[in-house]
Amino acid sequence: MSVRTVIILLALPLFLFLAGINSLLLYRQETYHMEAGLRGEALAAAVTVAEFARQADDPFAELGEAGRRAALRDAAHKIPGLVSLYLSRPGGPLLNLLDTPAITRKGLILPAKAHVVRDWVDAEGDPLVTAIAPDGHGAMVVAEISAEPLARRAFHLKRLSVALIAGSAALAVLLGLIVARRVGRAFSRIRAIIETRVGADDDRALGIREVRDLADAIGLLDTSVASELERLERRPGGGLAEGIVALRERHLPAIERTEGRIALSIRPLPDAPAGAVHVALPCPDGGWAIALGVAGGDPAEALAAAIAARDHVADGPASAFRDRLELAAQAFGVGWRVVATGATDGAFALAADPAAIDAYHRLNPGLSAEALAADLAILFAESGIVAAVRPV
Image 1: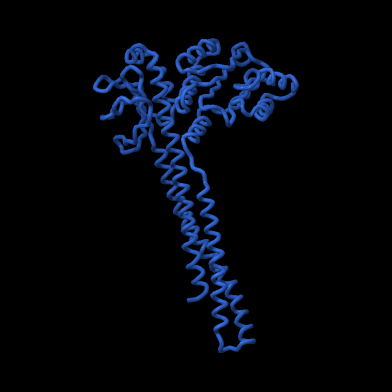
Image 2: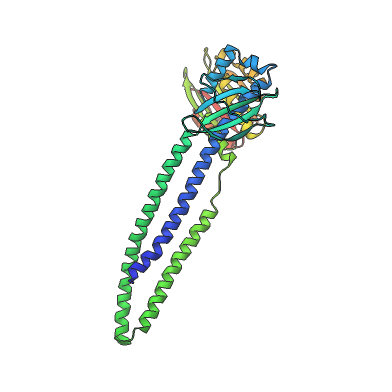
């Protein structure tokens, strides 16, 4: 067996092993994060409607009113992939809250608290993520979100994994050929030296040197593999916190807008609580109506309440801004810490000293709204949300 063959046979399994481990970790990490996001969305939808129903004396009657059902359907259409949302009492009636037929699940029992039940499939065999939440009146809200994007993502990740493994095999063969060529040249020089000094018939020294060189090469490869495995073992895993961060980035993004020559910049910060919420509307008479607040509860419930409160306030006119804020505070448990209407020049923060924010604003009158918000995000990094309004 030639040196070239030996090196390729040694390198190829190691490269394939590393590529397989990396592909597996990538597949599991990506699908876990996406699945956590879908579960969080389903849970958020169920908890939001359940909390709204909890405030009603008769949830079936009040949620069944045409106006409220229409409002719920409008809000539900903003949740990507939501295919089923209904209020159900075990062994009793069912109130469909969407304009599509409800997919009734048998065997669901009234839960003590909101949670994701399990994964189902619809009539076409597409996967669904189902969450239920109690309404406090003996009924429960069931929300189902299509997991088809997760299935598509998993399919593409599998294709990527196959491509990575095939590429690693080709790279291993190529590098093996390059290394074998260099090693072969070194062996040829050693043979020439040995034949000159020891004699052409004595191959013992050559055999010992070959084994030593190959052992050194294997040792280097083994060290490289061990180092890579240690790095893979230290790779952090995802969880609910990362899912909430991803959902906040999707549903509560930063705002950069200009209306009537008044620029607005709102930036959620990385350390913002799960229930931190911001909403802004242009005022008919000029300026901006701005509110910053926080919803209480565990992270998933707080995020759901924050999204629902933002949607409720943002769907109304600026003239009803304060009334809708008050209703959102009662319905979703949001504490509004900053409220301003008709703002044309100012700086705000969710959790920072207003005097310090205002002082920095007055010391830098020439900054644009975007630049002022960027400075506040650095200076008051723990304030959750910062906002700035400046004339253009």
